[in-house]
Structures are given as structure tokens and as C-alpha cells.
Image (cartoon, rainbow, N blue to C red; front, top):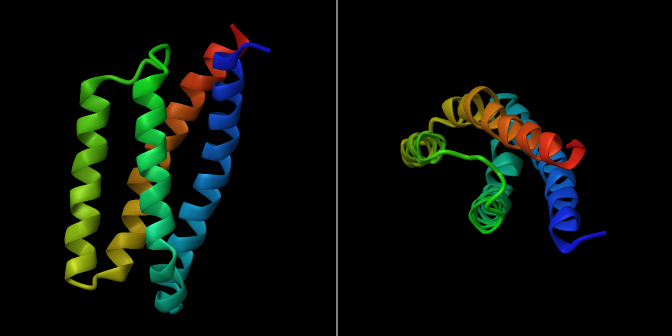
Length: 115
């Protein structure tokens, strides 16, 4: 298996788990378990950093600058919501804004792997 294909498959698996984590944090933030959800935010941040690095390193993943700008915009909204302690909004942003972007990246990776 080529190094590129192995990295793509590892990234795909990571994205699946990452989405599950995002959904879990979202549910905890909106379901009265804010402390537990907030404790997971640093892991989410590290995960996003890794995803961005991989996207930039694997040139074959067609992620446009506008996609990255949208991601940055959502991340700014998340930071603002965290600063104002609006945990419900943070949960909503994770589930309804961030997860679809991650799904889009995952779909692009799936297309590369299967072609």
C-alpha cells in the first residue's frame, strides 16, 4: 500500500471518530453536562489542527480556500461562543456547522480512495 493511500485511509478513520467526538461534545454541552463537554474542547482543537495539516500535506484532497475560510469562520464563532459561555451555541456549531464540513472532507477522501 502506498504511503499516500495509507495516510488517506488513516485520515478517513480519524474523521469518522472525530465526528463521533464532535457529536458527543455537542450533546453534552446542550444536555447539561457542560463540564464534561468543555473538558473535551482541547482534544477537538488538536484534532482540527491535525486535520488541517493533513489537508495541506495531501495535495490530492480538493479542499478550496473558500472551504478553509468557512472552517475558519466557524472556528471564530466557536471561540466567541466559548468566551461568552454560550455552550448551547458551541454545541450547535459543532453539530450543524463543523460536522458537515468534516463529512465533506471525508467524502472527498472516500472518492480518492475508491478511484
